Length: 244
Image (cartoon, rainbow, N blue to C red; front, side):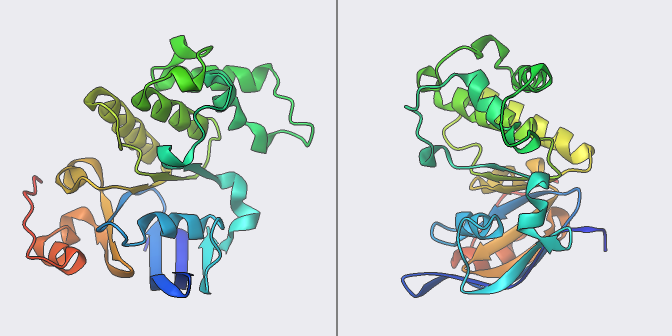
């Protein structure tokens, strides 16, 4: 198998003693663009938060390039769900993106011209350079999502975790985002996306994990994105039009 970017062993996470993830074993190869799919309440966002140490599991372990997450933090970028962000916080688009450089600065955390240049380049890449001085509260949902993608890009990470990055964005923004994610994959970055639109999985992704509290299946889209695994995951006789 290719080099493993993320290795999860026996991971169990519970809220109020009710398991929301149960005994998850998962290996994510380096350089894949992977969707995590499953019904509401399946534990998709919880899985990402447990990998990042935001949630403490009841049991199990997570390794990033065969090391604990804390020692690999600088290699990881995270784009949270839009609904979890305080968009009223008084800051500009450029300031938000420059926050992504903080992990590479000394403890004073004072960005230099180099970091500002990198932030401006990331804004240009997501088509938001002309909005650099705009307050984030004045941006549309799709524009806000592009800003958070730019913040992740400027971290120059090896692994990107994104929680529903296409939620509430227009078609133009969705195309722009997926093109950037495919560029990251070409650069051998690993991209893990919580995704809900099953119809676009074959077009957007090359790897998929089916999740419903337990891991149902994981592997290349061309091999495992089929009616059988969809039915196991969603609990109904599921049919999806797959364009290969």
